[in-house]
Image (cartoon, rainbow, N blue to C red):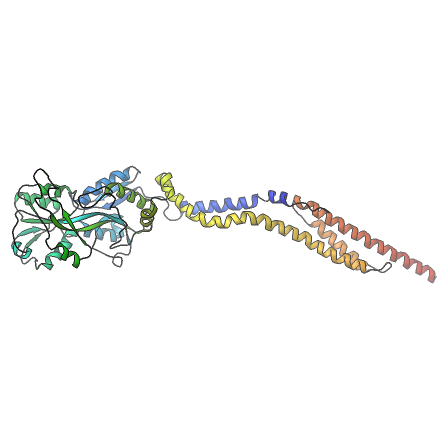
Length: 449
């Protein structure tokens, strides 16, 4: 007897996993688009630095680049890195991004902050109205020197270095002027010197390097400072780099420098991190006086750990969704993909397993009745003609009723029909045996009469 293939049943059952998949995908899409923060904000606040500083110039460039993607980057002018760090640590300040120089914090002190990498190197510039011989302690006694306002990274680093040389407020007059104010005061002659930590391309630095009567001092003992403070770097300003025609500076100038990083709050949207990293590559990726092209931005986590997005960016660039989808769609799409990838490892096997399992369940019901029929037929074969078979007839009748009530898909209707036919044949055989028994009983009754 030919058993029909269950292929038609599997075809009819395809809607089961499809509906299951659609329901699961719908639920995941709802989760991806509603739970948490799937869409990046349209406004972001960045703490930069004092007017005329390198951070101030960088902030303006970042704002222009982010505007291309419809993000309004609002810049907050600060005294410098120390104030930037304070604002970034305080969630009530509303600042999500800031420029921070190395050596000001660490992961234990700022657990809610992560780095997007180093973006530039900033020399500690020493501008004076005239150059004198001797040690700093000898040359600077009684001088008026600006080390920038409270809240600046310059002031923190300058105090550390001055203390190493035995210089404090008792020997010099330390002022808190901004870089622009310092430049104006130097040019007017109202102060003797200015210390500022800022990038080469700072407008104030460019102005003071070529100004008449202003001298850039170097650090003859730069290697000693680097040995004492590992976050410091030694760089050299080449002869004539500021003005070749006038040979400014007239000789190589050894300088101390620190790397500055782009730091964000840990809860900032991942899409904004990729946007900021792309902007950093565009702004800081070119060559400068103190570094080659491609040196920055760099995956360097000196004070703070790199964010997960920064590690991915430096390893393989932007994720797929951020390359080919609009910025506002990429975030939700990335979240949906993160949810779907592990899900597919479950859904795809289910697409094949559900129909097979359902077919097995239907066959199990039919084969179960076949097993009971086989038992009854075996018992029926043991009954000799003339012996009563009432219990077997009742069992077959119950089996027939159960088979009649059994509902199966169309693909299994033929199997059920064959089962019912087998039950009917067994019932006919049982009736025949009961008929023989009845005739024998009637014959015995007549003989007894």
